[in-house]
Image 1 (cartoon, helix red, strand yellow):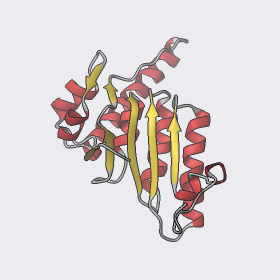
Image 2 (tube, helix red, strand yellow):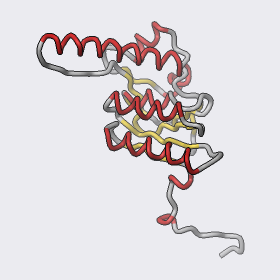
Image 3 (cartoon, one colour):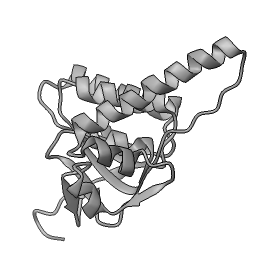
Image 4 (cartoon, one colour):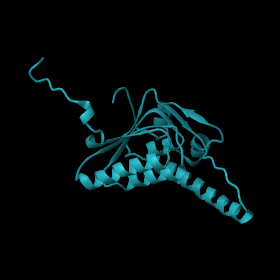
Length: 186
C-alpha cells in the first residue's frame, strides 16, 4: 500500500453531505419532498456551497415537479443539474431549471418530451374550472421553456409540447438550450 493512499468506507459517506442529491424514479410527492428537503436544508446549513441534483426520471406529477423547480430557482445556493439515464417529461423541465452553464447530460442519456397528460371528470362547472386550470398549466410550461432554454415559441410547441412523444439526443438538447454540457465522465 502506498504511503499517501487513503481508503474510505463509502457506506459512511452521504451524498447529501457532499452537496449532491439523487433524484431517481417518478416525480411524486415523496421524491419531490426529498429533493425540496435537500435544497432547503442545504440553504440553512451551508453559507457557501454548490448543490448538485442528479436526475434519472421518467417524469410524473406536474405540481410536484414545479415545487422542485420553484425550490431550485429560489435557492440561495446554486443548483447544478446532471441528467443520467432517462430524462423524460417533467424530468426535462427539472433538468433545464438548473443554473445556466451548469446543466449537464451524459452522452447516453435518453431524453423525451411531450405534452402533459391529464384526465378529469365531474359536473359541467367542475370541468369548466379544470379546463381553465389546464390552460394555465400550458402557459406555465411555455413560460418555463422560454425562460430556461433558447427555444422559440414555435420550437417549444413543436419540440417539447408535441402531441406525441419526442425523443431528443443530448446534442439536440444542447442546441435547444435544455442543457449546456454533454459529459463523458462525472
